Length: 243
Image 1 (cartoon, helix red, strand yellow):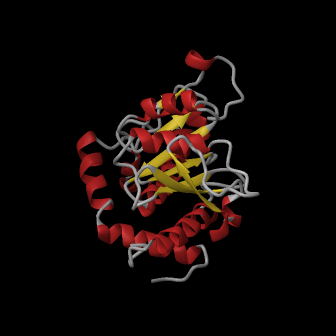
Image 2 (spheres, rainbow, N blue to C red):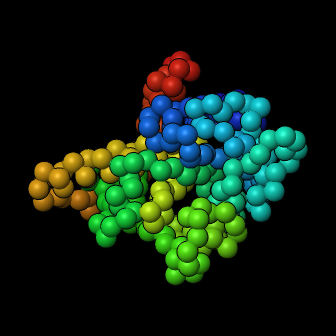
């Protein structure tokens, strides 16, 4: 697992790596972001300033409170959607990492009535239900960004206790109890969406995982062994070497 020495510096190094992993795996591109809760102060979290994830470095990381107010920002401009992370952390004490992405394979499920559901064992991490949040009923026409607390709180309510949620015509959020978990969920959300779309395009009737299979498989995948194995593999693919 990352940050084995337990230090904040090691955790922030892992946050940089998480950005690079998500970029390498095609979950994020020029847009998207990942954050981690401050382990010593749960009322704060760390997130890069407004940079594309593949370019994020240690000096880009800012510490925010749960109203998305940054400390010591200097010349660094925060992401417009920093508030998205802040209000999910505020609503979910069990969450210690948040990813927001626009993986293209996921987008068809944000613009249609078709449901994104686990179709293979690694896809179980997206959960039995992937809620779809639509800003329109509460906020009417918007710029489609989660750029203020009311929208972010609304999204957090739609997410409820789930590991993932879709944003209509926009993208998705994925959460985890730690960085490797949130990264894992994000990658396999994309891969599950790809597999589901491919199978549907072939005209096949799909057999989805049952709620019991999802629950048991999630518990297995989120255990230390699979998490360490996946994290070390992904960090090596992103150019940080194996552990």
